[in-house]
Image (cartoon, rainbow, N blue to C red; front, side):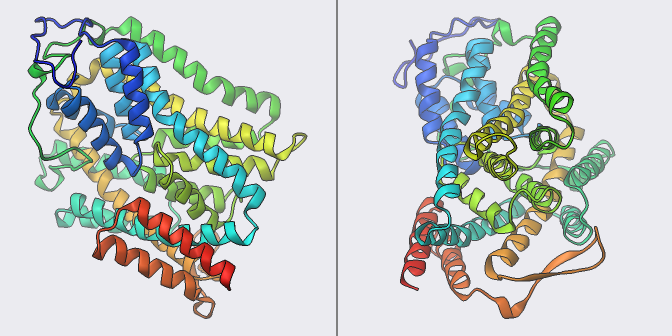
Amino acid sequence: MITATSTPVDAPARGTSDHGISFGEAVRVWARIAALSFGGPAGQIAVMHRILVEEKKWIGEERFLHALNYCMLLPGPEAQQLAAYIGWLLHKTKGGLVAGALFVLPGFLAILGLSYIYVLLGQTPLIEGLFSGLKAAVLAVVIQAVVRVGSRALRNNVMRGIAAAAFVAIFFLNAPFPLIVLLAGIGGYVGGRSGVPAFNGGGGHGPSGGKVIHDAETALGEGLPDHARPNVAWSLKISGALLFLWLAPVISLIVFAGPDNVYTHIAKFFSQMAVVTFGGAYAVLAYVAQEAVGTYGWLRPGEMLNGLGLAETTPGPLIMVTQFVGFLAAFREATGLPPLVAATLGAILTTWVTFVPCFLWIFAGAPFVERLRGNRALSSALTAITAAVVGVIMNLAIWFAIHTLFTQTRTIGGVGRGFDVPVLASLNVPALVLAVGAALAVFRFKVGMIPVIVISAALGSAYVLIA
């Protein structure tokens, strides 16, 4: 068995699945990674790299980064998909399913429990204050995301122009997020095919620093496992099964519950989201806020911040905030079911249609991923999408700021093309003080995300109780 202190072994030329890593040990390691997966994709990928590459030496740097690059081309949470990809490399289909599911399970259970507390006790002063503090901290975290992603993605005027165009489109024109992603991807693909230098590059959440562990020094070795070789029959079989598991509940709800049922809306909306969610959780949240608040009326604007605060303080992908949205949607539109039962079913349905497609993208494409290596046009499309996402996250930051720092807003513009502006007289001074304090802690004193959120929540609760 290969351990952190084992000496490297030579992999067979063709590669086999007999790498000495037991499935039971892998399950324990994936559970450990899931329990430590706080802080968004950058932190989660860093944890995986530290444990799988540096500590366990199960895979090498080259294979890890190649898998990460593929996952960044896909819609959905790249960290969860990376876990499923590496799990599949190590232990075939069951390895990918277990790794990907364990990455989601702790966050699902944590957010479900916190959602119960929110709907049952959310109107009490203590909980109200806690969420007021969370909103202020999350606003600082979202602004930090704009700065972090922007510094990596906006390296030339073309990328800055794409980001600005995306911001104008979604903030002032209410353009759909999927359309913005599509147009940016097409522009990047054409620019890459044409050899325009501005579209070269990329970014991402890849690890950096430390000693490089090469593939030849790891348990998996340089060879490609037999099960990882392109197999059209297997790909079609597993893709068909996952497609059925994904779409069967959606079609059943449309047929038997009707097109206007809340569960039908949840299934259709989050299935659509699973196809277009390029750019990470913050970009997704802008899209969800646009539809869940503005179109469906499932929750209030400030509650999107509450949901993100829950996702930030629990393990798992930040996209788990969608579970909170589905929970509230079903809780408030429950028909014929006790509200908490309806809400629980809404949370389960949302999580199901959000993450089953992630496994589909991995299992359908991973065996053929070698053909994508070094594809300049696809890399350029990703670069352009990342730039557009900066503009989308900026829209999210401004939208959050308006609804966190002001208690009243008004809409400028016509129906379908209007945008919210704050009523200045409704400035929430305590929220402003908390937000400024959180921003100073994040940017000036480099305080970690979790301490900032915890302290802000405590201060919010203390203020409400005292006032």
